[in-house]
Image 1 (cartoon, one colour):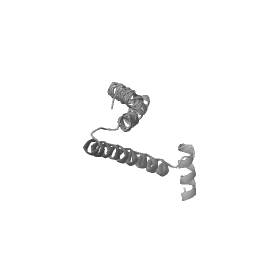
Image 2 (cartoon, one colour):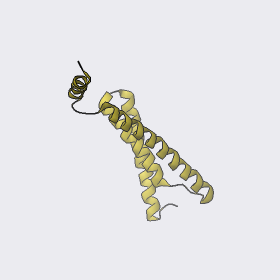
Image 3 (cartoon, one colour):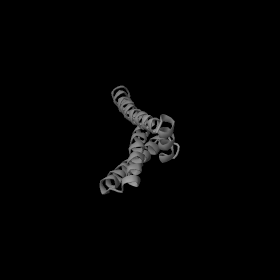
Image 4 (cartoon, helix red, strand yellow):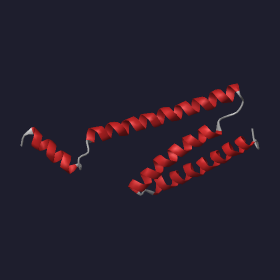
Length: 109
């Protein structure tokens, strides 16, 4: 088997997908997720110190990202742990969203 035959066989087994590209996208998404969470936590800290309040909307985004990540893991793995964590993140997302909406309406500050 020469190199082209091996490449064609690998591509047919992976349905034409480039495994290295998929892994790079997964790694990039993981790093983006971590950096995004760290930046939103930093925004919370700075707003807490300077403005004496935190960003409810930003926190809703953090928990929504975690909810989506764990719902995807649960959908793929069907593990009870993933379901429990997904539900917790979903509830936290809803709480932060409600707080954000109440803040926008002027009910809370």
